[in-house]
Image 1 (cartoon, one colour):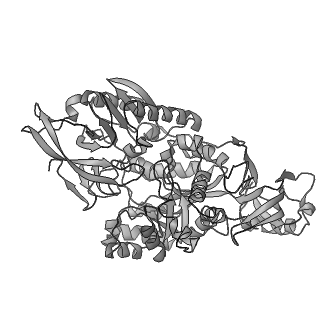
Image 2: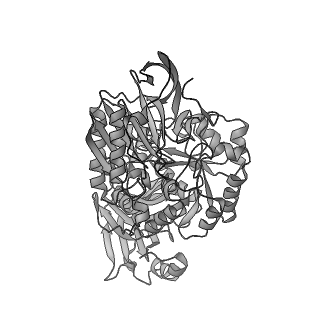
Length: 591
């Protein structure tokens, strides 16, 4: 059991000196030292009270009759992997389910921002996520969400977060800092609430997460950095990443289910030879199918290596760099005395097979099998009844009415494998007073689901390639998490939306009025408390159904879920209308 360092100190000294027996000894491995970026063979690790006491050539004096001994047998001993920026809700799982999914992949620390549930349930949702996170056998640190709504005046959330609530949460156990500050125009303009939230975080000695989703590296960028954000994960190319690091920010390069931003930035290290200390790996958003079938941070590290990165540098970017960034390098991030005993055993540093995982001094997984329980809280009814449509929807609710024979409209253009969209235009036909989608352009609608207003905002989107009478609906709609419906037929869109209202939220695919696949997400309309394997199976059925309906985009569901994210350019939809994120203003659908 993990003890605070101050309580474990005396025993750590005794074990290291060989005067007391360890709880666990890992024997005969190759030490991957992320402080010196080297590997050292013939090393033992002795653990007491969940912490590393000794790392050296012979831990025999620390082995007693009750000491558990794990034979490394010449394998590499790698620090447990850290995800420096992510959202648990994107896995469609609660913290317990997420922990159970990633532990076998070698993830032993997570810094997560629950701003998805904050947009639905407010501060109470954050507290629930924090409570379950603290129960897990790995380290799960919570960042207090900064922006709910993410862009005031452009969207309406279920429960806004106030500056006072941010300051209050900074005193909670398990809160590591402020979640990504998405309102970058507000910070750059000196908005008092945004600056106040950052100041409260800095005053508590904690880290401010950044989010500057703009290519403009002029004065607005410099103003944002001056406002106090410590990192950014919205960089998508080498130049953007270097610009952050030059200004003293951490550049968080992400590989999620749909975000492939490592390859375009890691050249700053592999080709330009820049110091890698302030480059950090993360996932941001990974759905359950990716977690179960492909991996988590081990997948990101392998990808970085495949992109030409030295394996030891890639491991540093997923361990000590992240720990140092959050100011907890004396607590975790390396295999050194006093730190939490988080260790992976692997036979190959490049392929990185995760053969055993030790977290906080406990063997938690071996050969892909989870060996521990991941405790759950009792989620209240308020979290399980969050989808309120206000009425039974029908086809006419999804009609865009206009006069004439055709209309020029704004179209949200999906960009495969990236979060940004394109602001497009299309000339569409008008039939019986209603604008119709055509070719690649189909309809998108945002259905208000927090207050039961019955409101529907309609627009157009391109890039999904749906064929026939199709509709895909989701109550996961970053960040306001209303309901997003994309489809080619208005009656089918209504049927899909009504179905999610009946099951309490989730994702569903309908064709010709009939359900093809559904993953039910009854907790805040965002998460399931079923095991990750079951959720992944249902999520995979969604992916297959979208493919069967003509959509060949990689991880198209992730693209779907971001169509209401009004803080990433260029064009989005909200409950208030169509949003041009380049200028941060509402614009008319018809040009």
